[in-house]
Length: 305
Image (cartoon, rainbow, N blue to C red; front, side, top):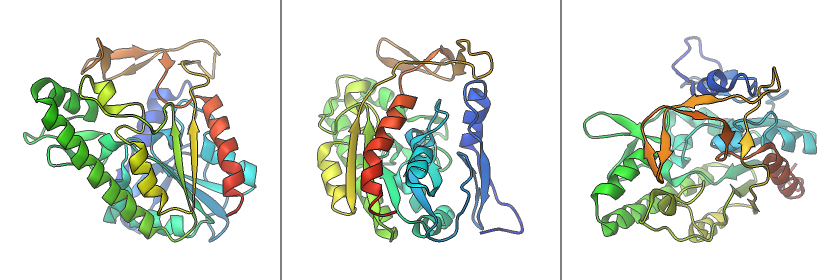
């Protein structure tokens, strides 16, 4: 798994570590493969020998932003097994299908089992938007400009008719399913599909506003899509909760409230590309939610550990 010449590093986790350092130490470690390098959420697994660890696949919900102990770590402790956290900010299923990440598939298939969190549909490219390789919640427009996915969809809502928007949603969902099934077919160890969200999969997208279009994470994904993906997995866990939100951001050093800067703002239900201050987390799962989803996963995953 080691290359003599280190290739480019996917460093999104380092961005979280830099912005959130006063709140959480993510114990970042670096995984180097022949194709690329990846900054990984820690702690680093005690063992990556075949059959001696479990794997958790996902995005920032799995990474565990603003949480000292995310569910992959808690699950490993509950099962007394090393745990590999493959949670990367803003990724969709196509991220894991990229040739540059084939070493991740090898790592997954050496583990005892894998949990796969449903990923955001806005991290899926389509005929209108092309995702960036380094963050699939960033779109590369025809003019070369890179913008956040939610901002791109906001512009689409503002400038297109609803029929056009909903047709693009259906196209995106179809592509997402193709990519996710392709990923599932590559994984040879037992697979547990995970719905981890503040909302139920039972929602209907609406073009009235950006929020009604996306729903909460995993954006654009509905019950029909979940049922398709379940057929390709060995088990399924559905955990819906919002306990502990909003979560006030607290300094781990002074134990006092803190604020961090973010590159976007939301006003009147619309995203603005403007700097704003974040004092409370109402998007990512709280520590209580990570504990709850671990309790839901443990009896299911125990069958495969």
